[in-house]
Amino acid sequence: MTSPAPEFEGSPNPPESQQAAGGLIIFLNGTSSSGKSSIAKELVGVLDEPWFHMPVDAFHAMRSGPELPPDQLRVVLRRTWMGFHRAVAGMAAAGNHIVVDHILSEPWRLHDCLALFSPQNVVLVGVHCPVRELERREQARGDRPAGLAARQFDRVHAHGIYDIECDTGSASPLECAQQIKTFLHRRPTPTAFERMRPEGHGHPED
Image 1 (cartoon, helix red, strand yellow):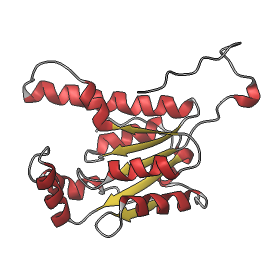
Image 2 (cartoon, rainbow, N blue to C red; image 1 turned 135 degrees about the horizontal axis):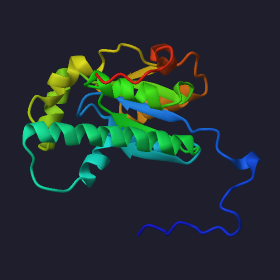
Image 3 (cartoon, one colour; image 1 turned 180 degrees about the vertical axis):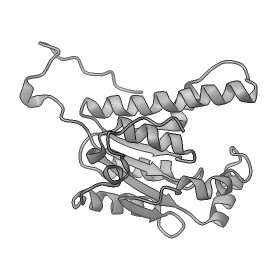
Image 4 (cartoon, rainbow, N blue to C red; image 1 turned 90 degrees about the vertical axis):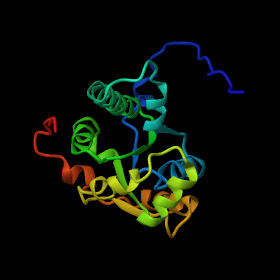
């Protein structure tokens, strides 16, 4: 049973010294079945401070309603992704640390995140896995269309820039989580998001 949120007396606004400066976002990007969620679950267990795991699948699971024709479904899916990005940005802006698992298989998703997130506070992690292993995992899961990960394989990593990369074909989720934790103590600048964010950080539609 989940414990109720604690209640605090006094002013709802903490003193200036306690106000949030912006939380860190660990952004896991990889194909379906690449192991992002497994890494995220390990990360929130090994990291020292409170972290929130915000998977995009949880936002898709919130959606109710009838089946939609493909053109309407595309619109609804895009709105869902955009809402997810803004929820992550809002949580981070309030000072929360977030672990995100994502699939950057369409360029506009990356552009949207580049425009919304504080680039210096994003750790972009490339989650890789060999195609044959992805196919084996898809078949074992049985809840993903056959060949989905293979179709996403080239598009997901097309931007080509990461802060750190890991391979779940050769390392366990816990090993990947430990690699990321170690990296957090020596994060270089500029970050991958800083290098990719265009001057003026406009908001491209495609």
